[in-house]
Image 1 (tube, rainbow, N blue to C red):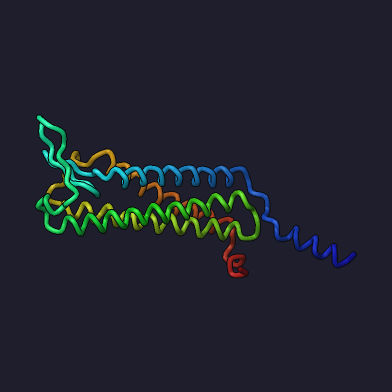
Image 2 (image 1 turned 60 degrees about the vertical axis):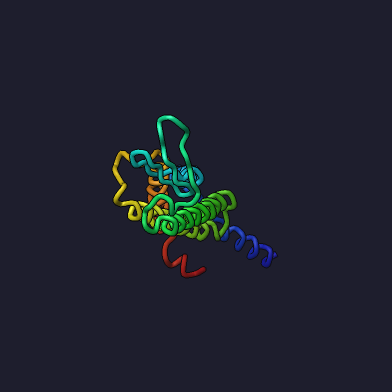
Length: 197
């Protein structure tokens, strides 16, 4: 009887303490905003047209020339844009952006799993998911900055397309959600509990 009582007490001790409504609401908000960031970033990377410069449209996948009389003439060979290093630089921006989306998806999955399957490891999953969102923000920012630096001579504020601003917004959301997630993790899970793991 004593052994059963001890095992029952251990199982009860492993359960996660009840969360407040405010904590649950904030965590749900972080998950929803992270999902929105993943969607925006995915659409932006897939479309890829980020900068319009007079009659030229620069993208991650194509370079297009625009005329009034005909449809846009698009080429996959970015070296024809006559911008030094464009093909290599945009390839890097495209790859880094795609890795950012993958990292954000895994981070979002860990955040959701930590809320659905509540156990002793839920807070650790939440912290790891938040770290992945932070990594995704860094990768996304590198992709954006490399694109802007590469085309610095063609960049104008009104030249950026809606897809560029979608990626910028997604990157900003990833940063806010990552920082908020890590902050919540540090508040709700004292460092001495983390050391026990």
